[in-house]
Image (cartoon, rainbow, N blue to C red; front, top):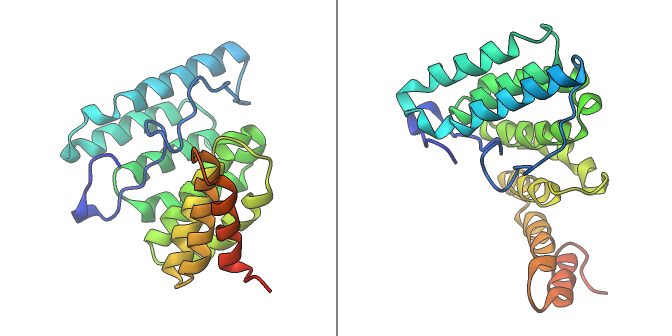
Length: 205
């Protein structure tokens, strides 16, 4: 996670520069303006996030100002701008400020504008809800994603949902999710581990 900041609270990895949620070479999906303008804006957003680690912890406000300026180029109710603002607050240790922005972005159709960013927003919102003491809301938000169309964020969904479940004292269910997500990546024992993951929540009769 970028720039750990205990004084500001947990820092959320919004995945813009981290492998767990990053989308290398992702196709741009932006509905705001013409294709050329969308591409230019998305590229400048990516460039801003690529420079994130260049900012010292005490300069977090400067980074948020860069993101705010990019978001200001879009209509005030653009879900894309709201999402980027939420990511900026999250990545600088302010889950409480990010939560309402994520919610508004989703309510204003982020998932329709970009299915990928919509799913990222649900993952990151769930993590922020957990960090602010509301893991049950994270479980409610992410559980439907277990049966959503598959993409590279599947494991991140399961990992974040597992953390929310653990915060609710449902460690066995969380372990089942994590083990089930890990199993396909193992060089051997994939079937055994998948079975063990299932039996953690569905005891063998």
